[in-house]
Image (tube, rainbow, N blue to C red; front, side, top):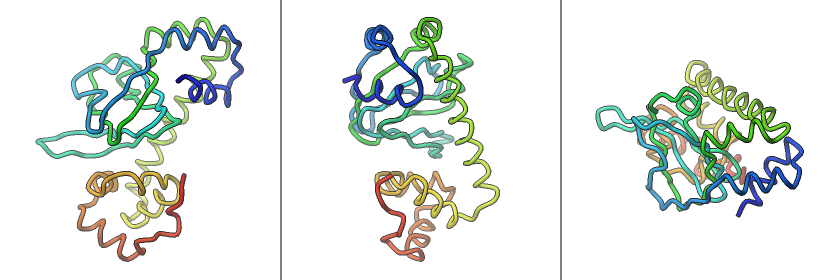
Length: 198
């Protein structure tokens, strides 16, 4: 069950056999059904979860209205990184949008791995930089791009979002209504040329 996450780590850092055994010992495999929450607003996010299979979304809820902010897929990490780092209550919900299996890394165990596994701090730095770049890109897109351009960029750069996310969630993520998204998709064509596996 840990093969995927170990292979993912090895793309970035060298791991000894004892490091692999420690990761397997300290982490937990959990399954989430579609629509089940891995994190709710107001709770501290004390984990990062590597997604073996499935998908999650992060969203805000304001007066009953949901605003999608991010989507997470297999071979990637799902977390509210701000809450994880600061220990403050999360403003975000994290919900499975498909039946999913994850490897959960609790913060206390991540801190132990930083001290014990050579190069693990380097991996944490790379992960933090990647998350920061994604946040900056999303913010810039809402300022610089039209909704149609945002859709095209997501279709090109993250086609799994287009393929696997329900339309109302995708519309919220792009900052448009579902009706407006339908018009955008109609203009661009239902079979977008970028709609291939990510």
